[in-house]
Image 1 (cartoon, rainbow, N blue to C red):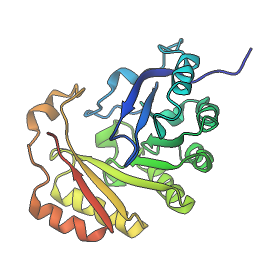
Image 2 (image 1 turned 45 degrees about the horizontal axis):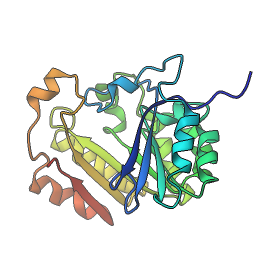
Image 3 (image 1 turned 135 degrees about the vertical axis):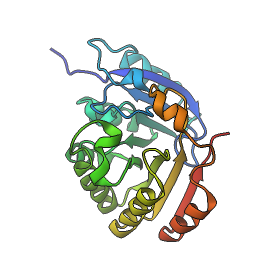
Image 4 (image 1 turned 180 degrees about the horizontal axis):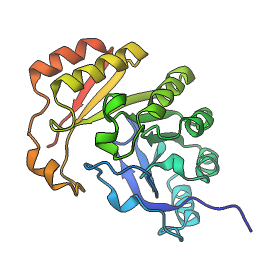
Length: 235
């Protein structure tokens, strides 16, 4: 049997926002062991037997984009779940693209092995580590994320840590505690993302969402903790 190829569940040929400051294509990899209520891509959580989009077709499409795009971002699902990810990244790097990876830090050892191949990492941090299960539905799921943050910081690879904020899952005290913890770990680039209803299948989260959360007073306590800090609002 030949080497397994990446299981691709979606592909965006052009994005001006996924890789900060660069034009990119986005490859959505199948599979995620977590079940976050606000997930934008719940259809990518299962891994199917056959890839919905053959990797060879995606690679051919990227070959035609050489000179038109700067980067390719792999996300999911949880892209590090796929054993073919490193091989796929190598193929795309060989075309001359910069490589971005969006990950929830579920597999720190796999992430550490990939970091030499990456130019940028978007690392989702969902809650204070002890409270992760309330978001992911998986006990102990915060523990590997701490290790993933340490690996990214030690690597010197450009990164952002970011957190999706919903008042029911991250009330002000928890959000402030999370920000303080990340600052103490050495994170200096932090982004808060306002909850979006897109893809969310959790009715309780949809009905309890508060537009404009977190407010200015809370942001004023968090911003001084980081050299780089920003908020992505819904428009």
